[in-house]
Image (tube, rainbow, N blue to C red; front, top):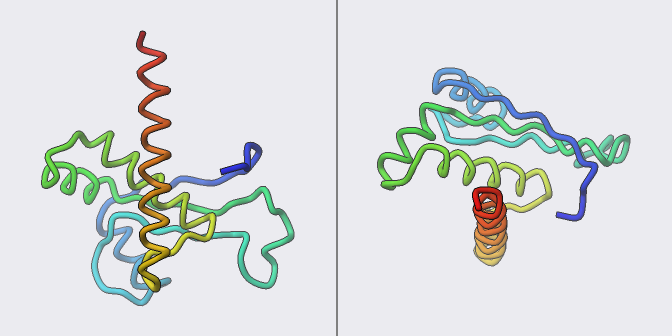
Length: 123
């Protein structure tokens, strides 16, 4: 992502807590899997360009989705973390189909890099 010194915070919560974030900040009801709060946007976004923002992940939703998808919870968690980080970099899948494809492509690329790195460390 060409931001080797970038910083972000990660908050892992349960469904009740992420539902509160979802309602308060996005005006949506119920829990979701991941919410990102970019810090490099808006009027004061240039104050500290290395501060990317916050990613909030529901561990309960991640585990439930992993079971539904037939994958491990760690793999689903990594997918959600990457998804949140991409939002911090300005990717947005909700308002533009072309952007959604670009975000999915970048997500798959990053997941492959992480998987390859983990395999190298194992062997």
